Length: 69
Image (tube, rainbow, N blue to C red):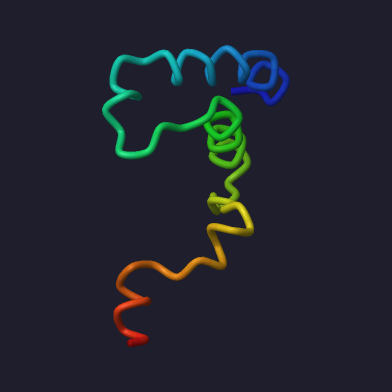
C-alpha cells in the first residue's frame, strides 16, 4: 500500500477499529489515538511501546508491594 493512500485512510481505519464489536471485549478499552498509533507503528515497522502515565509507571504493582513486605 502506498504511504499517501495509507495516511489518507488511517483516521477512518482507527475509528473503524474502535467501533468494531470486539473492541469492547478487550480487557483494556483503547483510545482511538492509541489504535491510530498502533496502525502507524505497524505500517512503518516500529516497535509499539505503550506509554503509561507517570503516576501509573511509578506505582508498584500488587505483587511488587507484597514482595517488598
